[in-house]
Image (cartoon, rainbow, N blue to C red; front, side, top):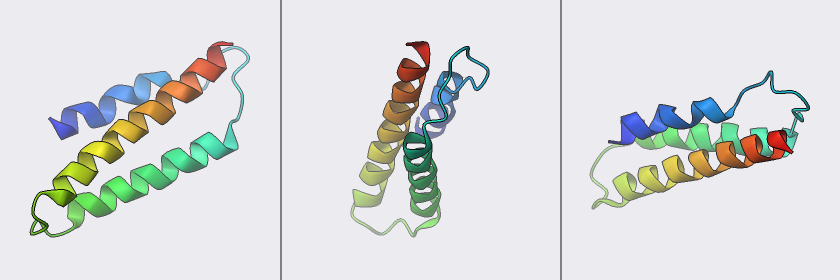
Length: 75
C-alpha cells in the first residue's frame, strides 16, 4: 500500500506547466520529506509500529506538498 501511494503523487509535478513557479521552499520541503521516507524505509522494523505509522504520515505529507505545488502552478 505504501509503495503504491509513494509514486502516485508525482503527476502533480509537471515542470512544463505554463506559468509554473520555481517554489524553492516547497521543493526543499519535498526533498527533505523524500529523504525522511528513505531513512524510515531502511530503519529496523522493531519500533512498535511507530516507524510504519511515521512512513505513512511522511507519504501523506509528500502528497500534500506535491498537491500544493501543483495548485500554485495552476494559478
